[in-house]
Amino acid sequence: MKWFIRISSLILIMLMMPILIIGENDNTQISCNQDVSAVSDYAYIVMKNDTGGWYYEITKQGKPFIIQKNIPAIQRKVAFQDSIQSLLVAKSVAKKLENGIFPPTITVTELQKLQINY
Image (cartoon, rainbow, N blue to C red; front, side, top):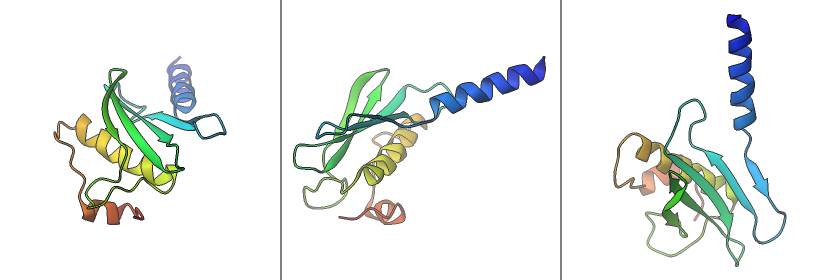
């Protein structure tokens, strides 16, 4: 019986893990939870803006909490070049929030470690 519960839990986690990509046009969104192994108040959504750049939104209990339309920590207003870069920073911010770090500041050093291009 224990093996059934473990397999069921693993299947549930696997079903929750994929990134959901909605649409193939300018309104493309990528959504996923910060940590599927634990119940979290925070989730993130990565979206494409009207100029082709990417940004993220952090939600708290399903409600918008942070909308980051530009790469944080740099001196100019530049959107992320692709969904992966936006997703990496969104995940980092959500993790900080989940760990009680507020504000969840991102530094240039962190951007460099995440290999964010700007």
